Image 1 (cartoon, rainbow, N blue to C red):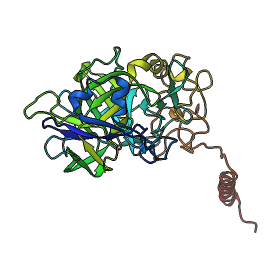
Image 2: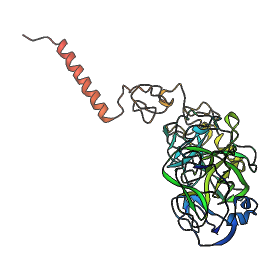
Image 3: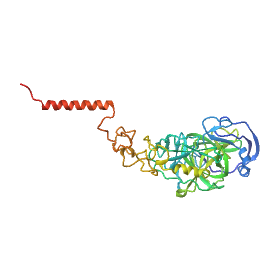
Image 4: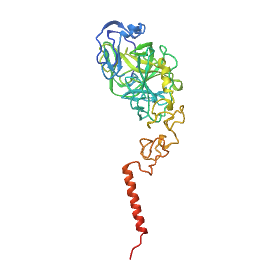
Length: 409
């Protein structure tokens, strides 16, 4: 994420239309004379899009597309290294984690939202890594049954100690201030290209927050219902958006919030960015735009997935090989929210015997997930164990015979 606080510039250039990641973009050019951010805001949607290059965070080239990975939001404030801790009125900074080197957002009940091109994967939250439940990924659909660049997947085992996030229950409104959080590239040095000021991208990535505003709404970009942001060169001293941020490499799957603190709502998932034709690689220039999946458009489908009780969601949430009630011994009924049971040592998520292993099948003391104790069984459950037990019994018998026998004279 790149952040900025400066004034407004005009430019004239050529532009092309293509998808993100930037590898094989078609060479379709159109001249746009004296195009300024204020003029862009007044353009019709189709012409507005023709003034930019769309880039979506992929790692391989797509047909008529250019692959890209949208990283920590790049901010223009200060030296660009700040905003790596929660803001004062935190909307949910710690709920944003690292997934496959990119970003994902923990929304509660074990579920993570991210961009489809990020994919499910081991998720780093609060310094802990959580593996995904195999086969849990759900890709959300548009009304015409086409697939959006938006998925949810479930984390295996105990849920992270994080709050539930509220999915926005109203559509985005133009000019609304938003907080964006992502695991993108750090800011580098100031740069200018074709009269446009901005920043290069530095090395490394950080989970960072910044601000922007809703620039365009009700768009269908790259097969996903979305809204846009614009990276503005703000006037000095302007307070709203003082942490102006650009969506950059690594931010894909990151969060966009409206409101703050306990009243904050998750309104979008970052998934693409927009650049000028022939813009130098690894740069953020004023006039670049970000594309954010509109979660209000997918809200009903998202809630239908993430609100399911664990004991009736069709998944092996605790990894014990058993799925849902009545098959999983940790489920008391189909509405049980946890496939683990505090009363069953081999299914409670705790290392009860202190051997560093937890529950069935990881703890060898558990014969199955219904076993009430993690202590090793007295009856051997392998040939080697049976051999050890037999040898021990033979030694005991031999010792007993020596004690009970009397010498013959």
